[in-house]
Length: 87
Image (tube, rainbow, N blue to C red):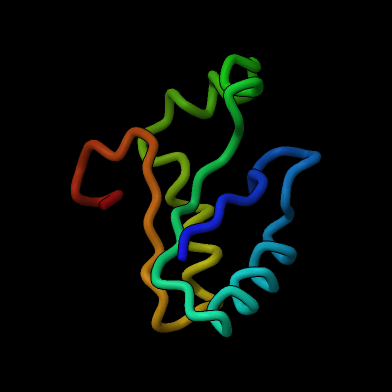
């Protein structure tokens, strides 16, 4: 099962506490993995996102938030993962 939901970082997106609750519901339904991403095509070029995209592994912190609260579900992310520390 794969489901795409709103961004964790956007002010109008999904807040971490909402995402954690949502992920628990997905786990009950048998989710295989969760890919943590943020933003949309329309928000990609906003100054705040352009700045965040310069930092290596900038989505890792969001994945770690979710991973702390859910067991036995593979959590993956992307966005400038260029070294083992962020993999």
